[in-house]
Amino acid sequence: MQLPSALRQAIDQELTGIALADLADVSAELSRRYRAETRDGRLHINDEIAARAYLTTRMPATYAAISTCLTAIVAAQPDFHPRGILDVGAGPGTATWAASAIWDSLATARMIEASPAIRTVGERLSRALPLDRVDWRTQRVGDGLPGMTAADLVVLAYVLDELDPPARAPLIMRLWELTAQALIVVEPGTTEGWKRVLAVRDQLIGAGAHILAPCPHATACPLSAPDWCHFSARIARSRLHREAKGGSVPWEDEKFIYLAVSRHPSAQRVSRILAPPQVSKAAVMLKLCDSDGILVERTIARRDGVAFKAARKLGWGDTAPGLPPSTAQEH
Ligand SMILES: C[S@@+](CC[C@H](N)C(=O)[O-])C[C@H]1O[C@@H](n2cnc3c(N)ncnc32)[C@H](O)[C@@H]1O
Image (cartoon, rainbow, N blue to C red; front, side, top):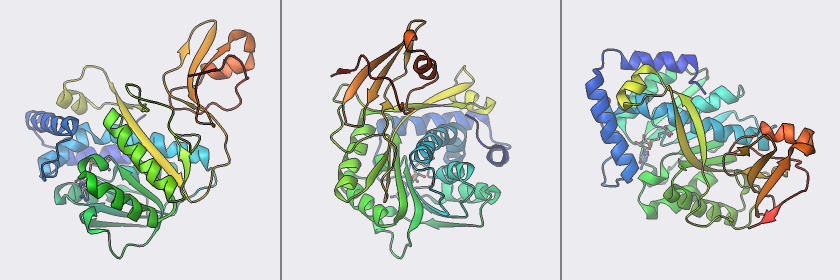
């Protein structure tokens, strides 16, 4: 996956004249805080150089993850054409960029962001968005988002881990109130991220939400530690991104977990692929979460013909509809 060219150009402009050494140091410190899930009362992105480091080393990866999640909404509800997005903890506006690349219908965005530094950068980037209106607010979500009106699509991407645990459930309830159609929560693909998403899942099912993805069911998650549910998205790395992160390959794999829910149920009945498929000349082996909430391993053999050919094209995180009933084994 690549960032849209308008976004790449806008980012390049923001990074003009920045010393690589400064960017690399601040990027390393940002990564350390994200990995440690530091919650010390300070925002991670608290000045201009940190905001630029985020553009260089994190935004491409979070863009890829969010795009993948939004694409799962399209698959689950092809008739959903949001007109407005509420992007909470918007950072540089990553989710709004991803949504606008997916839905031509998108016309307005409201961005809520606590850090003036990243908001300023995001606001400049968003001038290149093909939307009628973009409204930024410097605001902390802990204030309960008073006076806000509902949006068709509400996104909370990579924010929950930065909030104090007691603040999470009230925020999710408030975001659900503000959801006219679909709400999506994205988190890093760690065991802790998965646990946070499971708590959100319980809460939203209790509030009457319909799950669109990734779970093809609303029963209990069949996975248990040390296993956990997560997915992966690949994003091309720019030269600066490689140099700032000290990486050698021209891409990055971002691991993430998410939950997309809707006011309306999805018509699709599918299984979700929970791990990279194991493909050999003889067979494709899939680890699936099925629509009854059962974890199954399914082998599609070459002799299954058309199904085998179709299965060879499937990837981690895809849905697998209409597989032949064969060697399913319950775990
Ligand atoms: C990891 S960044 C994610 C940005 C963007 N959503 C993305 O996926 O690229 C988390 C963002 O949430 C913001 N944030 C953290 N706590 C917040 C709060 N209490 N209220 C509003 N924004 C907050 C941070 O300033 C930061 O910009």
